[in-house]
Amino acid sequence: MPRFRIFRFDPEADKAPWYRTYTVDAGPGERILDCLNKIKWEQDGTLGYRMSCAHGVCGSDGMRINGVCALACQKLVKDYAGVEEIRLEPLPFFQVRKDLIVDMDDFLDRVRSMRPYLVREESPPEKESLQSPEDHAKVEDAIRCILCACCTSACPVMWENPDYVGPAALVWAYRYLYDSRDSAFRSRLEKLNEPNSVWPCANYFECTRVCPKNIPITKSINFMKREIKKFEFPQKIE
Image (cartoon, rainbow, N blue to C red; front, side, top):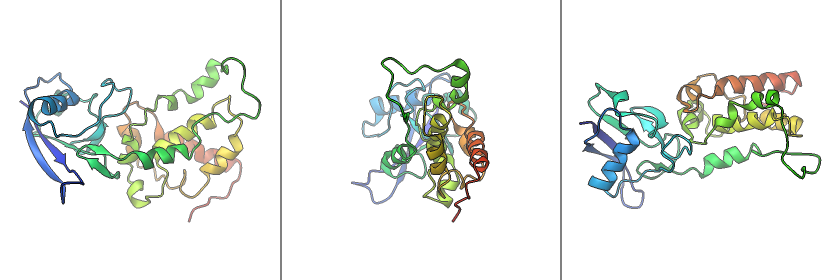
């Protein structure tokens, strides 16, 4: 039976984080999220974590599993066969609200700073805005982002420069920068040229490695850097 060592911390009750170990009756094909549910429903109702769809679509159950940021609903017990225990911790970099739950407000504010919506000069059409398959293909990878925050949590630059907007926000910037229906290409590039936008990225590739949707995040950031250089914007690095 798999054994789990889980990070526990309630800021309203605990002076410091601590860990508790649980043993779960679970087969190799069961998900880590299934095991968490068994612990909460059968052993310890005080355990805090997020979940919603449980199918890798909502991004709610992001956490660090044996040191790697991932979705608990996508990882199976058999993925950790041979380890003495499976260690579950909250996503790093973020403030812990309770146990495996982190505060996502700042993360979402960083995404919002990239204007994650269409900006159009003309009035919106009466029906949907059409897009060719070729134009859609340009942003097809970025559209898969589910805002799980695994990439941002795994990025070493976030610790080196806490003001860095982070890879998730830049994925959303890429998605609208190259959307053929958007009219704000130049102003979006100007935003990306700010000191804490694309330029702090140091090509660690950790964001790309942990992305549960296999988005080529680092490649996308580098592509935007090259786009800025085409416009000969000065690099605003401080």
